[in-house]
Image 1 (cartoon, rainbow, N blue to C red):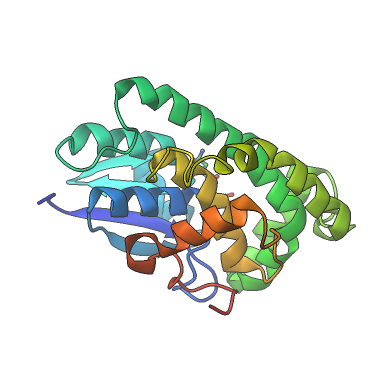
Image 2: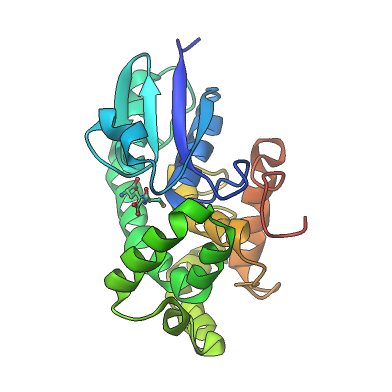
Length: 234
Ligand SMILES: N[C@@H](CCC(=O)N[C@@H](CS)C(=O)NCC(=O)O)C(=O)O
């Protein structure tokens, strides 16, 4: 068994609400490998608590004393440190393809979902994080949070268009990786968990193949994601 692992995860005012898309990628990766970690709640402004990792973002995984930050680097670490556990990438040649999916999720999916749910994050975070969250995000987007999410119908339509590559592949197979999920699936699923955790807005139509894929991942690992604390009812 792995020695001792600690995962720092972004939490809301409710410490059980773990809502970061990147932390969800890591959470699913650990479940895939069958590895337990102590999960510590972390807030946006708790920078000093993860200063030992040399940066200020989560997820941070501490594995037997070694700190690894960035969800992609954590996935690589888990794959090389635990080669006897189920592979996250499905082989060496598939690793760069997973990396492409991760880049797509971060550069297309996260921004598209944020234009729908960003304001909802303001409602679930700890009081001590609220000024930091608003000012850092308003600087990033160059507009007020309220404006980022204005015209919800148009934003949802944009998200729908952004999902075209995912939707197309899921018409032919149950997961991005084929018949069962791999890390590439978790890269795209993390942003949907982010939305589920903070917002009650439905991003997908029930007849969208992406909806059924999300359901399958909510059920994976005995419903790990479905049973997590979230803004969604069930
Ligand atoms: N590329 C990084 C991104 C990590 C990231 O942006 N984490 C966010 C939470 S989702 C964070 O820690 N934000 C802290 C802040 O904005 O100060 C990864 O994949 O882990």
